[in-house]
Length: 393
Image (cartoon, rainbow, N blue to C red; front, side, top):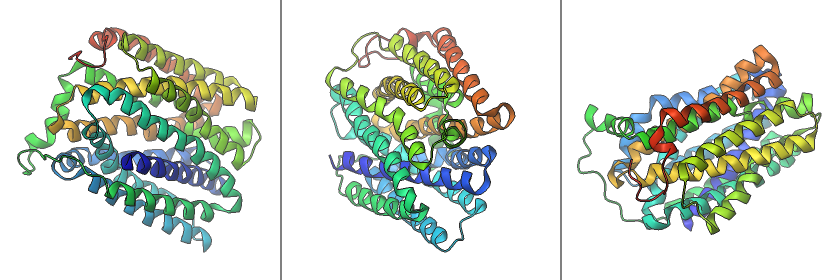
């Protein structure tokens, strides 16, 4: 529960931070390209540090790594608060902060992913992940909405609240205790660094699940463009942006409640690919909508579909990975997740600059539908997977 509360606080803070940085960047530059750069610069450190981060997470206490990451984000939020208050905030500072956040998340994400299975028995892991996701999605609902309303008092007010939440999260995860059995040797060499990549490459179910998230969300994500939709298409302010960012999480939260009570027990592969297709269809609806209500509804459906996908994918990856490999496999998984989210934001910014925001979202939705169909053929063991537990690879 300490871990769950820590995730609640840190996710709320991160979502508020992204609302503030995104709105502040667009307010300063009015550029879709710069919004995309924020995502790209958060992704690159995770890509460059993936092998080192995985090794560290498998050989050192994962709770302490997460706590140090929270401390670093406290410092980042305070820097942004002071810079905004003193009118030093500008494009280059926001881009530099994006790089630092990417470095921190390169270690934080695999540490948190690999820590969760160590806290519950394997047979209840799918429900535990749904419960964990429920908390995270509640934070994603509350965080952006709260961030949007607090932003009325200035970006510095948002950054101050973020610093306090990150500090709380760090204190909570610092108190997490678990049976920590590090890998046999702490020696860092090419074989130990590449072990996670090798493992994923030779497990069709794991590779299919991880890569599905990469390509589906990379193409279908519209998060980076929400400031543009809020301001220029739906004609709302920071509060509207906060609600739009919270809408997918509202759908995800509802589904996570259901999955905690009634977990997916059969036809996991078919359900996974169907959820990805629904995500693409909802993205298309959002792209053509000019109604705030319809846009909110489309994002709610997209979030619900994504939650089904997340729980199935994360359960498959963790259950099919040995304990002493989870850090390195989670680091590889984190790069794919980062690529789908942060690199997806860059892709959205680039295509929006070329095709406009509506064209970018429509192209992404169509791409996601194509990915769902293609993965059915490319990764048959994943598509045919029946049960989450005991299914092998």
